[in-house]
Amino acid sequence: MAYIDRIRECSVYDPSKYVPFMVGDVCVGQIETETVAYLREHTDVFWVSDAAVHLQPDLDGFDDRTAAFAHVTATLRDDGLIPGWRDEPYPVGGAFNLPPLFEMERASVPLFGVRGYGVHMNGWLSRGADTLMWVGRRSLSKPTGPGKLDQMVAGGQPAGLSLFENLIKECDEEAGIPEDLAAQAKPVGTISYMTGRAEGLRNDVLFNFDLEVPDGFTPVNQDGEVAEFMLWPIEQVIEKIQNTEEFKFNAALVIIDFLVRRGFVPADDPDYVDILAGLHQ
Image 1 (cartoon, helix red, strand yellow):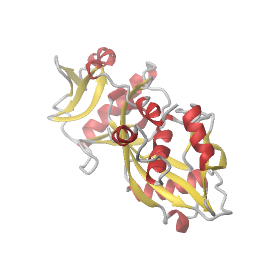
Image 2 (spheres, one colour):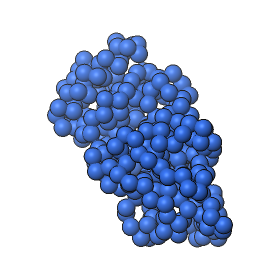
Image 3 (tube, one colour):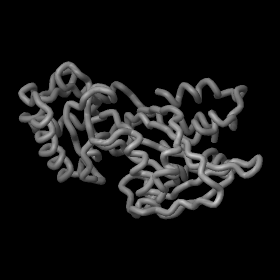
Image 4 (cartoon, helix red, strand yellow):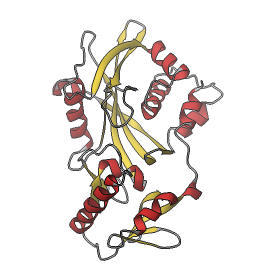
């Protein structure tokens, strides 16, 4: 399977099946039309027009909105609409660099099509002319992508932490990487995608980092979220992405971005331009 096919798997989006989710005049998400019927029941939190779902205007402050969402998402969880509850607050706003309008439970982000943010870090090293990459296998207890292959370190961006603070935290929890080594990670850009999945609309931006680790370093999971780590030649990583579906859908995109930047995807690849565009939707 070509790289572009992996990218297309993360581009399953039909705008006719969604309506905007508005807070005042700010669009903060997109909600499937099938979900709107459930939200109509919560008139203290939402009002539904012909064109959009709106947060009630009398919920006009951060605390009021957050409290209202805590109540309604707990009800939706009990109704089976929000699987994989995490008890993690997630900031919601009009843009990443703007103050959040409220916070919501992280597991509810796809149901409301809110833009999600995360950090992903490729752990790699060189042996002579060879490039190797550390690959993690997600725990079977993970609410999303159990047992799938993933970056050495990856995690959602929570409320209250900077990107780099979150990366350092995830490096410790997921791979036991000392802070002085984790601090050497280099920011290398973002990828973004919008795709409908069982849990709702994944409308995500991932901040990507590369960390060249010493030969001889071995990651050790600390929080039970990674079942095992493998150090693979980059050719084996490529084979897994091209010929299997073992990688978590967004982890595959992060690695494709790495392969492009490191010259493993030639510029005369017939899909080269589409690959670059597809990584930034």
